[in-house]
Amino acid sequence: MSSQRGYYTADEVRVAEAELFTRVPEGMPMHRAAYGLARVVASELRARTGGIAGRSVLLLVGSGDNGGDVLWAGSMLRHRGVAVTAVLLNPARAHVKGLAALRKAGGRIRSASDLSRADGSSSSGSSGAGSSHGASILDEINSAAPDLVIDGIVGISGHGPLRPMAAEIVAALDVPIIAADLPSGVDPDTGAVTGPAVRAEVTVAFGAYKPVHALASPYCGRIELVPIGLRLPEPNLAALEPAEIGAHWPIPGPADDKYSQGVTGICAGSATYPGAAVLCTGAAVAATSGMVRYAGTGSAEVLDHFPEVIAAQTISSTGRVQSWVFGPGAGTDTDAHKRLAEILATDLPVVVDADGLTLLAADPDLVRGRAAPTVLTPHAGEFARLTGHEVGHDRVAAVRELAESWQLTVLLKGRATLIATPGRPVLVNEAGGSWAATAGAGDVLSGIIGALLAAGRDPAWSAVAAARVHALAANLAAHENHPAAAPTSASPLLEHLRPAIRTLRTLAAK
Image 1 (tube, helix red, strand yellow):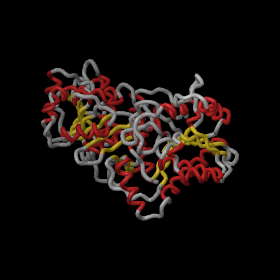
Image 2 (image 1 turned 180 degrees about the horizontal axis):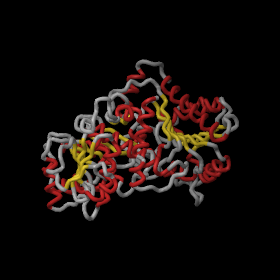
Image 3 (image 1 turned 120 degrees about the horizontal axis):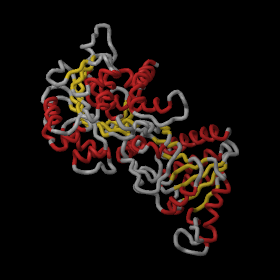
Image 4 (image 1 turned 120 degrees about the vertical axis):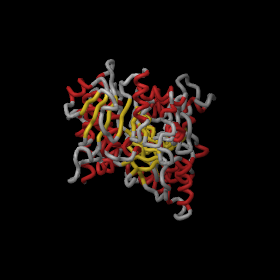
């Protein structure tokens, strides 16, 4: 895929860094990272306070190179007139050269071992000097009222939640935090949060984006990448750029007609859930300019909303289609099982969602070994029914394992939606919000994917492109020409599909 953003694990970054160290002078990568971090912090100070000189920044400094990046950045900020105080979480392992640079620039150095708990005892459990100075650290931080805090507690080698001392300091802060490389306490490779963690307003990524930046976006805030010269391999986790999606969205060409653009077949809805048929079919209608055929008991409701749809009662009488979508509101009885089996017996691309996934969980042989493109779209609960276990903390590994095991494409829903296809990188779409977490939104998503498949698009591309448009439509619906968002639902989301597609196509044209 021509335009994508790669995300690299800690191990992949370490390999690239080792290669970089053979090409550049010692210390240059750290100086590049520190300079980029200082630049972002200065920009944030100006945006938030109106200036740089005379402002105050607090550094939370752990051991190793991540702490060194922050100390060097602090020294650069001091040279621009910023008051900088560094709190060392582990003074004995603080980066020596970075610490010396900050001291030389006039920065203040404090030790977190001075931190006391509310009862007056030191955080290390000892009394005496620790307790006499301990309360002053938090008091000093709060009284100084820093304008920004830089999180340099742990880097890509860190796993698990913040340790008690760091967690206590972070919990006491009421100041915007800028994370160096990643928010401490959040797993760099999985985005898992298992305890206290930093929640940053901005994260400055050094050298490469990491999985955490897509999988735990609410903890990262805005992501700023600082290049440091890494040579990176093809990624195993990637996101398509919005302009790439807009550029390849199917639109009618000079020689196209309603058939050549792709005919989507929808088998959804029931007497109990007629709305699912309307939402799924409507999404297919909005997604492309071809034709949509509907098979099922919801014909009256579908035609009432979308008279351009060709409706039939059975699959066999539907007419020729180029893809099928099965499942939303379709039921799980014997008749539904027969309809799903009939669709999966074709050589057409098929999207299976909702009730269809429940049927597959009970009878996976319906789809295993299928040669034609097949896309499953589970949420976490449906994933557990399909596999017999929870998704777990490593969502990327989980979705990849299901795709490889069943030899098909899997779209695992979430704010960070993941799409896995055997033998290919996992694709991710970070929605930028959770407005699509509403009843019926999944019905809309499956209809979009089916329409893209009917237009001849690749299954993985169809799934990630549909997820991007779906998320954007939800965000547009929530804001509805107003900066303050309000709760939305599936019907407004459906209404905003075309504006969302238009937005992405506009990006592609720039």
